[in-house]
Image (cartoon, rainbow, N blue to C red; front, side, top):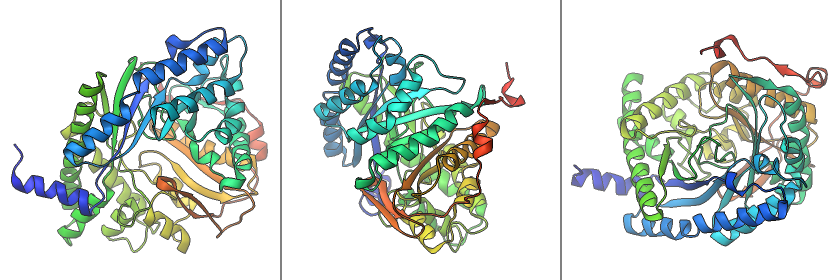
Length: 452
């Protein structure tokens, strides 16, 4: 039963502490759109997306107005396009990319994800064609997001795909150099990619999902930080308990929005993703939470331990509030999207080696990091391989979203605007991993994968 205190507390969270629902994402299966004729497949894709999602934005706006809860993005995710492309005799993936863009514009959504391939164990029909088209697809569209899963704990790491993705990321940056290299900001390389993730750019509608579903991603770093500030100098056990209680409240709000959207759209409710998603807004920062725990600056020794505490407490509190939990769920650490991370990177306290260590205990991985424009594809591939290895061994989702800043060097800045934010170009270790990357093949699945 809600009381006056709970209602007033929630109003304060929304008005003063940046609490919002980051996204309502409608997942749509395209498996029944497969056709040997790519033009017919594109027509089916457009018709299905615009039919299922025609009311998505309007319903989201109704819920915002009625409940006073900000819903920042309305998004669509679709079946990995490589699976649809496999059935086409004439494999022209860019036609599907333009179809997705047209459908996104017609529906009025912020992003559409699923220009994706799942190649953790090798390349199937359509996979390589789609991956090689990603730079052009991202350069020629505004709303389309892409992802590639190159590894999993069950199958190991496809190093041929890792090598290819290093070149794809670099090419995506080159083709959008006139727009601050926005291309790779819409591209995620995963290990252990979840099939029900509502967050972009990595969202796709997995083949094990229903025909259509509503998934919701919540936010709330500012709320957690404010709660810790009010608590004062309590010990870390009390800090963990406080974060759990706060995450419970945030998740309840997300579940309310998900159920309302599901009922009004006539689409099943899938999951609530518990991830604390930061923004460039001052105060809405995961880094500031870690600093509120007692770190002088995010990136200092102790950062990984503080993030581990935060991530587990967020998940524990969220699971108590909602049974249908999924996606990534925990805490995001995207550098350009988090005001505190941006500040820590600018002053040199936060470096990519520390970020890599933090990814062992957070939700995703090396996210929205600007790197020097002359970084070689092999170094990018090696960054992907390192991050995938963390996911592989720890049986967790990890990812890489790095942006080669073409024509820029360390200390210079890129600015993407909106939720993508902006920030400094960070230094990398430039010792060459080329011989290792060019070996290709597959890093085998670890022993702990044999759980059957």
